Length: 497
Image 1 (cartoon, rainbow, N blue to C red):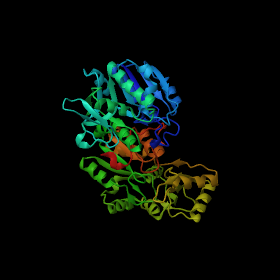
Image 2 (tube, rainbow, N blue to C red; image 1 turned 120 degrees about the vertical axis):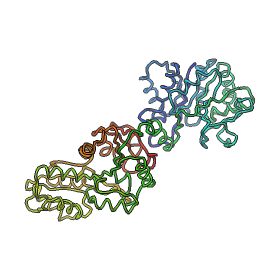
Image 3 (cartoon, rainbow, N blue to C red; image 1 turned 90 degrees about the vertical axis):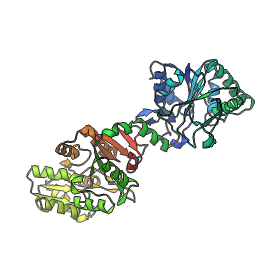
């Protein structure tokens, strides 16, 4: 038994991810799609593989050089842009001829046991089918009264379908010969290079020349990845999120770009918060945004229909205030909103524009040139400055706008002095003291955020789990080749359940 993987396609619906690599090497749940198939063949005990490549085929060849314990033969389809997968299989005919084989398309992330189960079956000819699924995009199969497949088609109606083919097929030696005779006839005599392999199967199923049965793999995970929606489904499914998330007791949510954009709540966010609370989860809202006080955030959430208290909100300024109090600082200059200045006054600090011990640079939505000039005058005179958080921009309904990091950059460029300290995410201190105070174990906490370099990096630094959502700063393309990997990628917080 050998494996045949058809991997010549372009994957245009996944651009720009596929601009420089074939679809089968796109990562899902931090593993290339093609590797899921290798793992399944390995578990089934099949170590001879034929791969037909086309678009960016050299990348597949390079990847396969590092696959151990497989005999891999590469067939190239140079005309991949003008042909389809039947022609790709036709090109592999001399390798597969007169052999039993497993056939699959390369765009599948699959449970590693699926191919093993097909091989263990006593049935010599099988189509792997999910009997619990009906997808418009997928091939569907129907069966006759004896249980044999009599049709395979994308256009099949739901009431006629036994289930969806997952594009994995088991051929006996005898069926191999019949199948390739039909493919050769279609390609050479009909001069048809643009059809799917299933067209040949359909003809042979209807004529009863091939007798195949469906093998129902319901309950085993699989995703045919054609577009970004499929990739999202695969990311969540193969990260085993639904399994390990049951042990999570505490959720820390970023705000801007995660729960809301500007003053608009992300669709489904309220329902997710309500559901998590009803399941007994502890919920906290975590933000680098230093322009608002906790009382303002409580009102903000209340107006959006989310009930919380100041104890549920953790801001980057918490760390700043804690730092200053531990050092018995009394006088500061705060370059920030009136709301933030009031927070410092309420905490017992004196606002000093002449000889403060520290200058505090924050996300100031009321910024004036006079404030900048005052801060620079103080820093030039030798006063150290602190930045509440490193974010260069904040997402808004009108696109990115300058945040504390950008304002801090102005101070640094102007004065040629670096900040003494930068608080907020990704520093783990933003959550570690809170976790210790409440007795939360790191492996039972999760950070939900939209930024790799703050939210996800902080979770990693604190030993927490993490969810990256694609509703804010980060796109799916940006996370394809990164080091600080989240535990799962979701489109929005609405996908947590």
